[in-house]
Figure 1: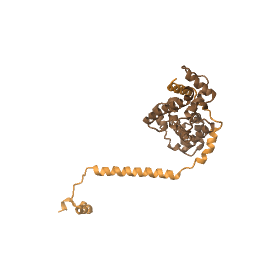
Figure 2: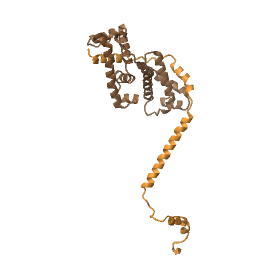
Figure 3: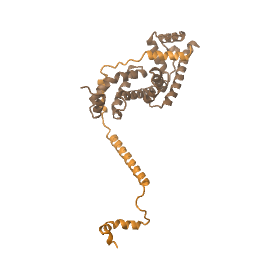
Figure 4: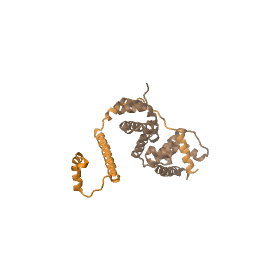
Length: 104
Length: 191
């Protein structure tokens, strides 16, 4: 007889004889008696996971804004002089207070 | 009113450990049947089942409820059984002379008769257990899940955490390993 056939017969025998699913008496009680000792919440673990989640969201938001900054079209008129920009910003409130025709 | 499993799990997660008991009572038969596939001594079977439930309680927070609780539990059980096999690996080689009379009778009948013989199921079960004990932990696990329990490869991949190609490779190697063990056992008698 070939080994393959013998192997198949052994496997067929194993299939035909499934193991028992008998549970020892009061097994669930024994498990329940052991649980409270294990019911210690891992506070550091909870903190760590919360911090990691927070850090991941911050990184995602930073990346999104960075991408948006680079990709968004520049609507403002291009200016070459930083000092002029600064002056315009500083005097923006004064310019708004003056009527358009009294500017000159 | 009967509570659903999801309600019981939610209650356990909120700190009501007593809600865990109905789950233990309901699924212990499956856990014990699985453990008996890999351990022979009843004390070892109980140790495995206990480890499964204590781990399940500890890790219950990681159960997301996407699949049934039973599937999640069986994944845990199979992985604990695999750890057990790795921890209790036996390197001893078995020979034909070590078989009991009923086991060697059964083997002899199977070898000499071409028709399948269902007599003496107990001897067959013992012999299968002996042969499986000679296999490496990965080979034993894959032979049990694939050949004996007839589970699909994809399901085995989910249960074990191995990739589908790895399951196939290990199944191929496991069959070869089993033939090698059988050849060693029968060599003395028939060759």
